Image (cartoon, rainbow, N blue to C red):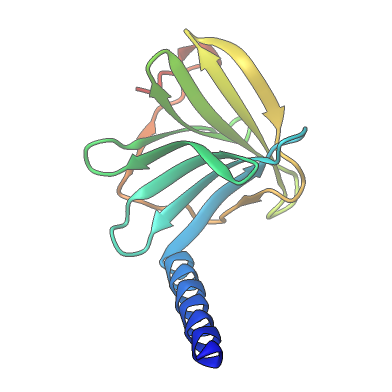
Length: 158
């Protein structure tokens, strides 16, 4: 009887891990920003390969503190400043705006990123992403709306 319970526990664990791997395979990572400091903070954007929705997560110590889904009814905003080589991805929730800046380097596939939080248009947090952060070379989605760049003060992520 004990061998049977161990066998069932093993089968159960296998199916749990297989389900987790299948869930991870159904998404495409487009941006991941690991933040400095204690608490293992991470900002990430994924595209669900089935629904095509974009998912945003802010995690601390592996626990999700904020998640947002972008789809036809609520699109992620993107602003490109081609003169400075910066692309901004952002959205607004209440009084808070959340912005990832991707700054192109001088070499192809060279970039740096930072993460900002604004409250009432004032920056309350700004952090450079750690070197292990990731940005996809091609971020294309029907759930991203491009907004023309005017100047840094005119960022409106609704």
